[in-house]
Structure formats: C-alpha cells, structure tokens
Length: 181
Image (cartoon, rainbow, N blue to C red; front, side, top):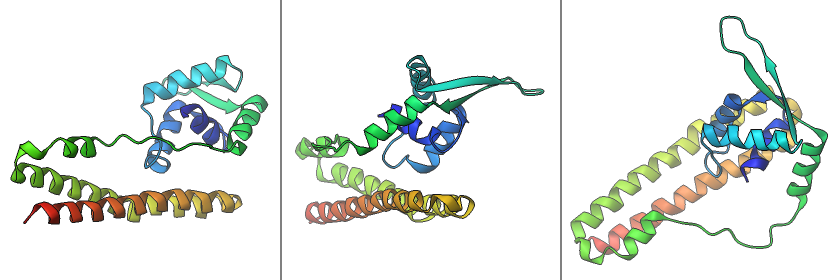
C-alpha cells in the first residue's frame, strides 16, 4: 500500500523522498504512515518498475537531492488501483485489546491505570485531529484552489480519524466505569 500512497502524492507534483515523508506525516498519518527508510526503498522499486523517474538536483552548499516524478505508467497504475473495488475488510490489530483480554489477573488498579493512560493518549490524538490536522487540510485548500474535490476527500479521512478517536475515548470511559466499582 505504501506504493500507492507514494504514487498518489507524486500525482500532485514532483517531490523528494524527504518531502514525501513530510507530507505523509501531516496528512495521511492517521491511517497510513511509513518510515523514511521504507519510503526510499519503495521509491527505488517504483523506479525500477518504471512507475516513477528521478533526477538529481544539485544544490549549492548542500548535498544534491533526488527528485521523483510520476510516469504515465505510474499514473495508470495508480488510477487502476483507485478504481478497483475493495471486496473484503481490513483486519485490525489492537495491542490494548489483546492485553485487556488477558488482564484479569493483573489487578484492578494496574488495569485502570493502563486504561486511563490510554484514554489520555486517545484524547490527545482526538485534539490533534480537531486542531492541527484540520488546519493542515484547510491550509492545503486555501493554497490549492484547483483541488476542491481532493480537499473534500482529505477532510473525510481527517473526520474518520476524529470519529475513531471519539469512539475509542467513549469505549475507554465505558470500560473504566465498568471496572471502577
């Protein structure tokens, strides 16, 4: 899937691996992220397959940078992927749920402490989606007036993150209340 995230971002314009990492960190992080090393490794494979091309851009006083661009083949591959229906559900792995499932012997106070910590972390993430991430989407919208349809979809993915965190906080509140009797 990282392949398609990179092709998707390059569809908006040429970028370096570093710029791709930065844009992912400010846009898709709530549902898709990658390490810098994964990005560079994937870009190399995409170039080998002819889906992207790169050129070295010299810089004065700084190391040269490699800028990647989408090829017609890459654009076609991205389009085919985007229009193909998803016919199954993604599986989720939740460390907290696995830990909770086996935590009966851990003691009520230990368990409540862990759940309260998770509640605080999810509350912080919720606030991030409601402020910083929302500002990023609105910022892109204001500087890229030709991307109105994209901005609607970006906002939909941001809203998913917000709603997911709201649900998680509600579930934690309910679980803490059940245990804290």
